[in-house]
Structures are given as C-alpha cells and as structure tokens.
Amino acid sequence: MAAIRPTEATATWWRDAAIYQIYVRSFADGDGDGTGDLAGVRAKLPYLVELGVDALWFTPWYLSPLADGGYDVADYRVIDPAFGHLAEAEKLIAEAGQLGIRTIVDIVPNHVSDRHSWFRAALAAAPGSPERELFHFRDGRGASGEIPPNDWVSEFGGTPWTRLPDGQWYLHLFAPGQPDLNWAHPAVRQEHEDVLRFWFERGVAGVRIDSAALLAKDPALPDFTEGTDPHPYVDRDELHDIYRSWRAIADQYDGIFVGEVWLPDSERFARYLRPDELHTAFNFTFLACPWDAGLLRSAIDSTLAEHAPVGAPATWVLCNHDVTRTVTRYGREDTGFDFAAKVFGTPTDLELGTRRARAAALLSLALPGAVYLYQGEELGLPEADIPLDRIQDPMHQRSGGIDPGRDGCRVPLPWSADLPHAGFGSEAEPWLPQPASWPSYAADAQAADPGSMLSLYRTALRLRREEPGFAEPAGGTGGGRLHWLPSPPGVLTFTRSHGLICVVNLSGGPVALPDHVGMLLTSGPLDASGLLPDDTAAWLRGTR
Ligand code: TEU
Image 1 (cartoon, rainbow, N blue to C red):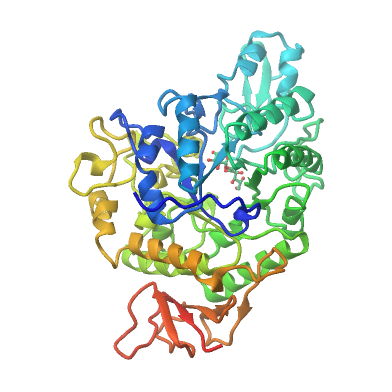
Image 2: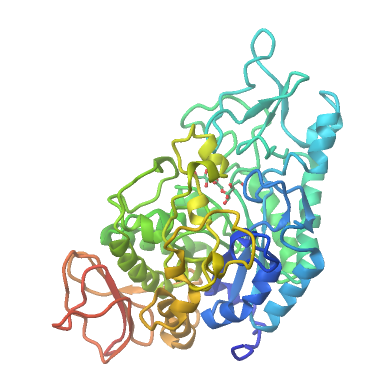
C-alpha cells in the first residue's frame, strides 16, 4: 500500500480537492454476488490512494428497492444489505480517513422510496390523514378525479402523478417509486437534519445534495406555464432557508455540502453558494459544454465569474452516473450533453473521443477549484451498449424506449484483464453485462502502461498536488483565478501561478507550444516537428 498520507486538518481541503465518485453497485464486488459492495471498496483503497484522490463521494448506499439505482431511499440509517452493513461503512470511512481520503455521502431530500416507512404509512392512511401531509397527495380533476391534479411533466418523462385505488394521486417528479416529500412540513425538515447529524457523527466529511433545486413546491401545485416566476417547483426561494439551517449543522462538524443544482441562470445558481448555505455545487455548464475552444472558455469564464462574488470555489466535472461517458460524448458529432437528446445508435469515434477526453482531463485538472472524477473515467471507459432486455434505468422505460437510459455509464468496472468478469467479482455475473472490450480497459493492464489513461490521471493528480502552480494564490478570492494567455484561434492557453501553463489545442491542426522552459505532462505525444497536435493538451513550466 502506498505511503499513508496525513489527513491534513485544513478546513479548506474541499476548495481544491480531487473527489472520486463511487457508484457502489458497479465499483467492485467483494463477496462475488455480482453486485459491488463496501468490501469491494475497502479492498480497492490502495488503488484509490495510488490514484491520488482526496475524497470519495458515494452515491446512495442506503436501503433501497433500486427503483432508481438507489436514489429511492427506504432508510437513511441502514446500509443496503447488498452493499454491507452500517458497521462496515463506519470502518470504511475510518480506514479511508487514515489514508488521507475523506468520505462524502449522498442525500436525496426531494423524495424517498415508496418502501420508506413514511410512505407506507401514508398509503395505509385515508385521504386527508396526517400521514399523507408528509407528501403531495391530491384529488384528481375531471368528473371523477381521473385527470392528474396538474400538468407538470416528470423529470423522467410522462406525468409525475400516480393514482391510488382510493382515487387520490401522489406526486413524484421522478419515478413512481420516488414520492416527493412535502418540504413545508416540519417533520420533513427535522428528519433530514437528523440524517445529516447521523452521518456527520459517523465521520463523513461532506454531503452531496441530490436534486437540490427541486425540494420546495408552490403549495397550490398550480399548472406550469412557461416563464412562470417563481417556478412552481424549481429553484424556489424557500430552499435557501432550508440550506441555511443545514449549513448551521454542517458547521458544527466542519462538514461540507456539494449541491446538485441544475440551473442555467448563473446568478440564481450562485445564491446557493453564499457563505451560510452550500460550500460548492456541481458545474454542469462545463460538463455539458461541447468540445469547442470558444464555448469552453465562456463556460470557464462564466463559472469563475459567478463564483467569485460569493467566494465559493468552482467545481469541474466531466461526467457522473447520469451522463454519457466523456470518451463517447467527445467522439460524436454533438460533443455536448443534453438529457433529452439521448438516442440509440449515435455514430461514435472512440479513438477521437479518447484523445479529446485525455486533453479534457488535463484541462479540468488544471482549472482553479475542486474537481470531480467519476469511477472509470480514469480508465477511459466508453459508454456501453446495454442489451434492451437488461436495461434497468427508469429513464429508458419512461421515455417509451427512446432514451437508452443511464446504465451505459454504470457498467461494473474492469479491474483485471485476465480474470472472469474482468476482475469485478469472483463468481456471479455482474448485475449489468460488461462489453467484450472491458478487459482491454482493465486497471491492472493500464497500471503497467505509461501511456494509458490511468497513468495519465495518476501523473496529473500527483502533479496537481505537488506543483505550487496549481495552488490558489494566497488571498485568492476563493472563486479561483486563472489568466488567459494569447493563443491562436481554437487554442486555450492559461496560467495559474508560478509560471505554470496549461495549453489545450482544439484548433483542428497542430500548433506551436507557447514559450516554456519545461514540459510537465502532455495528454498525447507531440508531432515529429514538436508541435502540439489537435485535441491534445500540455502542462508546461513557463518562462515567467
Ligand atoms: O439527478 C437529478 C436529475 O436528473 C434532474 O434534476 C436533472 O438533472 C435536471 O432536471 C436536468 O434536466 C439526480 C441523480 O443524480 C439521479 O441519478 C437520480 O435519478 C435523480 O436525481 C432522482 O433522485
């Protein structure tokens, strides 16, 4: 195992951390049942130390019927038995901490599972009962209440209302197995504050807040009209009082929050990042941005501009468990990302996508702020084609089969090229089928290859930690600073501090490197003339 790194007690670790997202079900299978688990994660801690990450974000590991990959929580105080048990989670948090790696858990406050005790009690209670006040139950419209209470559309497609035998409907912005909670009810607020304390007391360093802009609803649950302000359920002002009360709890434990805040309005996005609310939020503008120099520069500039006034560090993320993997996205005609645009059979050039993903890795790892890596990103995994009869994601079903869903970015990881199931687990078939190509991406083979994606990430993360040029200059605004340097069209060149330069060539042809005295790392080889090829990035030691 690599050297034990001290867990520096700095209260600002999260401002420039490299945080690795673990989708437990697909990370590593410790007991051979075909599903990833905490034993598998514990066994891979040396790998994560070697990779050089500062924290792990676990997607929900709680008791769940998996109607939505665990984002349908039945009990926050119970680890799903498929993953292990609470004592094992506590051990994992402690073991990782001793290795200098912090733990972030995932809270899903917008809804619970339909198996949660609260919802089961609400189903058993009559319309109008107090149990139903914890959720959004309403009578339908029409002569016999046969029309849903309003015209909202589910995030997964279709109506977000499901009718019960007693005639009432209940609201679920996502799948029917995810009834929305009524955040105007004091018991809902109290329970989530208790859940935060429960996990902070078990040593977690942070919490990712799922669907953070959706919790509060207009109590009238009115029909939605485009342009309605405030929106009946997105980004409502009531949210900020909730997050201020959560921040007061987190501050008692030096805990941090990262919000999943999908909001195109950067001014409203920044409101979640005020000093008495969330510490950080995911930057989906950058994630969804097409592979284009001008658009990427605008995304970077707008991100830093919106964070600076509130003193929050930016976050940089290229993929997660919801979006098409970067290698595949960047190998397509449309290199951006749009949930609504996903269809089967989009032509993809994986060689081109991989080259661009390598360059994007050096770009995102050079930018000021925190960076999030999604498991398998460091292996250069592409989006997998899942056989229709194996697709589990409700987004597929609820799109009428048009959307391939998200399973393609959730395929169990390849660890060993020569073992069954690419080393994911020892016995049972993995819960999602692995493509025939998976062994060629295996971590053990890549670790031995200096030109692999894994070696690139390991080296880049090491340099990011060691090179003073990546650190925030003292007295930084907190939002992070970079200085753009003159570049040919289609080339991004910037410096952070100490003369460190990052250059990314998206121009369509080779370009000369800026003046430099040293080469730290490139995402691919220079050409025979020493020029930086297209879709390639370099970290340089500048002349100043
Ligand atoms: O995703 C949130 C989500 O999918 C929507 O907020 C969407 O991002 C937004 O409307 C932009 O179109 C989170 C989890 O990451 C995802 O895995 C879950 O399925 C979902 O919430 C429900 O918990």
